[in-house]
Length: 199
Length: 298
Image 1 (spheres, chains in turn yellow, cyan):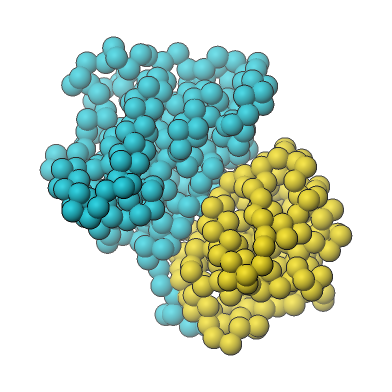
Image 2: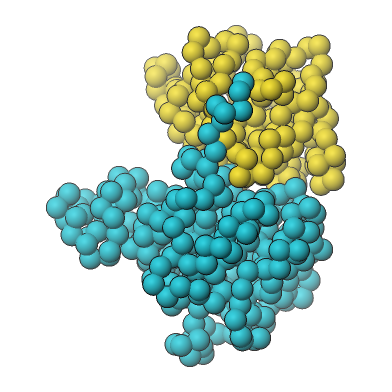
């Protein structure tokens, strides 16, 4: 099993650690690949878009030729996880803030995103979050986080805060507004790895 | 969800913000127009200040935080995070920047220090801080005061990368030296470098600083940025290097691409071609000892 992590910018090493620990717990062999250039995505069984600055990430995956590869992979049913900035990139539509920067969106999930839905860094927060598929709350870290403002009929809403969608899934694409890679709790990485065998 | 269940300004959130900057380039800007150029080029954040370090050097006088009006305009202009510099020890400038909505405060030696004894107690703030360091002891003292991110001091405004190289190698080397030492020896190291033992133990265990560590101070070209990444920097601050270059737009874009291709000389050659000349700069060894910026702070 090969898990590719888009390693252009952001908290890449944290995702690598989390995936490696999750693979270890499942006792299955697996390889984690860092993706900074084209040619690697097509060899992956799953792809993770980490947290970082969506404007920067969006520009560079385009310049490096990775954007189209991710779109093809997703079309072929390869599971894609987007966290925070990654959630913005998988969306089909963005708010004014997203348009202002000529952001390239991958359009993998039928949602409209609000780039900094909860405000600036001083408004960033931790919360014990309930998720549809977990039996106890998850400590979720929101950093200048986005949120989904509206979602199409194909999208499963997995969690909300004050009416704003912060976790959602559309078939093989999972989007989280927070950072599961910053906490030791691996339940969300396990949920994502489960999607690989299912699809 | 009740809003009172939200926890703000925790260590995880402050350090987490710094982690999101990894692999990125943070650019000094002095007005909204420059901020837009930086964002367009792919900067992960901008640093708002009154004048770039090269001009601060030339102008002399007291260097203070940027005009809040300019900081506010920059915040309104870009969607990426906006950082701003406060003077060492000037906690009121930091509070003002926090209230304006700055996403990170740089307690910076580039500005004239306001306190010759103490740095800001950064633990009480919701906004995260970045601080400069020349060695492991200095870095861990700043982290102990609450810094969520460290950067090398280098020698700002020179366009000469040698001091940033010196500081990065020093910090990396000191962390490597911790490996293989037993607890008693680490306690002695902590005493010698005047750093808290807990942070020395943590650095020994992680084999790196407990927070994100960027390069800064003299980075002027795509090759300089790539060099600092090769030396182990998590990302790069570019001060005067962008807007003192012949063509800021091209230089900004090239530095961003260089950080993503830092280990590919062929790509770096392409990236560095035809982008105009870098800032003129000044050799760091021509600066009189009393005029260096890196000796501010302790």
